[in-house]
Image 1: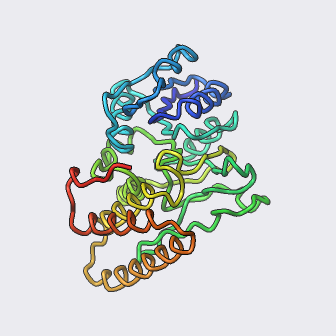
Image 2: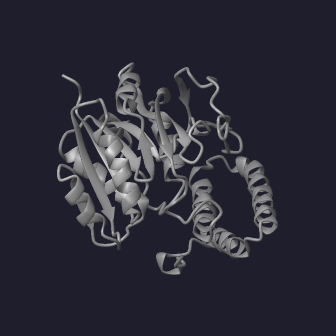
Length: 303
């Protein structure tokens, strides 16, 4: 009998995207699946429409928006309490190919030390353009190189391969991984929680794996208002500072990391300036400042 999989879909509003995502999960050729929607304080009619359209889907209804990471962890705890050995975490702004979970499980079962497996992810707006095939970390400046990003798929990513970094847009996770490293760090409200978790997974001796025969499509950055929006820029900046503070161990590495990140901040600012996104520039530098000063939750701006 196939290993049961718990599919966790985290939701904050966007009910139409959620329903489209759920349809592709229902139509997977892999069974048995248990589907858990974590409703992270949605203010639309998500709960009503999901329960009416897909009564077989369990809904964990949270009273307020706890942020993606805490939402993930509420779902992970529920799945682990029910003894699932595999959990598939999925954003609600995604669409799966019918064999996506089958191919992820096939790759994960190649070895017990494969703790995390990700599919090949395309842009929903350009179905043959790659959004992510994972990344590889530069061990000196902690930057992640993502060579597949924005490439047209011409067969160059057909082989399964070990990776260093996997976005939480879609990841298949093994139970033993949680038992070894715990849950994602809830101090990351939005962004970089997956970078941090990927590093912890590797440090515990598990492998991260790209399974390119598993495919899906992503509507990028919808929950934060879109790529380059004030909310996206704020949280990328703030969480980035937090990530480097936590993970740069050797003090000598700071002499590499600080100039590199400063140059990145300048490049980002000029790019936003060129595009006329002045609100995003202000949000970006506020995020950097709040990350540096460790500003508390009460300082978070409302977007």
